[in-house]
Length: 71
Image (cartoon, rainbow, N blue to C red):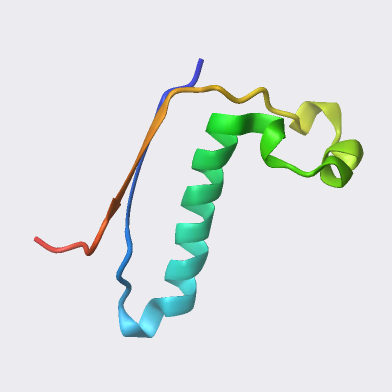
């Protein structure tokens, strides 16, 4: 069983907006996969997905989305 804690923040530095959006999307996608597994995919994606890439879901995890990162 896998237990994960994801910490991320909503506001990004002006110079790194695209990079921040990619990292935020990845964090939320991982949280969704841990919670829902294959149910998070549509049927067309699931039919073409190899068995070794399928995931059961229902894994405990916490996702904390902070407004900004500061000291």
